[in-house]
Image 1 (cartoon, rainbow, N blue to C red):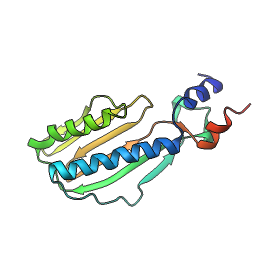
Image 2: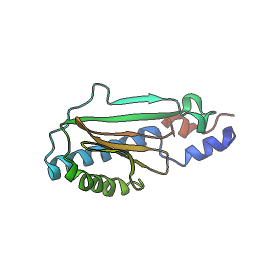
Image 3: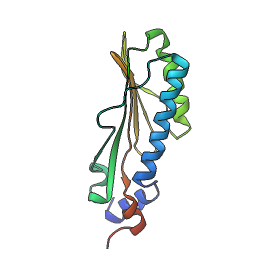
Image 4: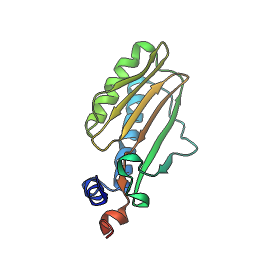
Length: 155
C-alpha cells in the first residue's frame, strides 16, 4: 500500500481518540461483568493505563499521524478457578463480539494459567488471562490522530 492508500484505509476507521473511548468502555463493561457474575476481586488500576506507539509495519508511511494504544485494565487479585474459566471466556467473547471482535484464540491453557486473544477488523487485540491475577487489556491497532483524520493525507 502506498502513502495515499494507507491514509485512505485508516480514514475509514475511527480516529485514535474515538477508538480509545470505545475500547475503554468495553474493558469497563467486561470488568464489571466479571466482578458481578464471577465474584472476582475488584480491579486494581495499573500504574500506566495507556501507552502509545507508532503504527508499525502495516502503515509505515503514516509516521506521527497514526498511533497504536495499549489499554490496560490493571488486574483483579487472584485466579479464576479452572472450572469457571470457560464460562468467563464465553462472557468476555459475547461482550466483545458486540464491538466486532472475533472468536477467542487460546494463547495459554495450563492448570491455573489461561489466556485468550480476540481480534477485531481494525487489528485490535483483546487479551484476557488468569494466573496469579486476572488481567484484561486491549491493543487498539493503528488509527489516525484526530487532527490527521480531519486534515487528510499530506500532499
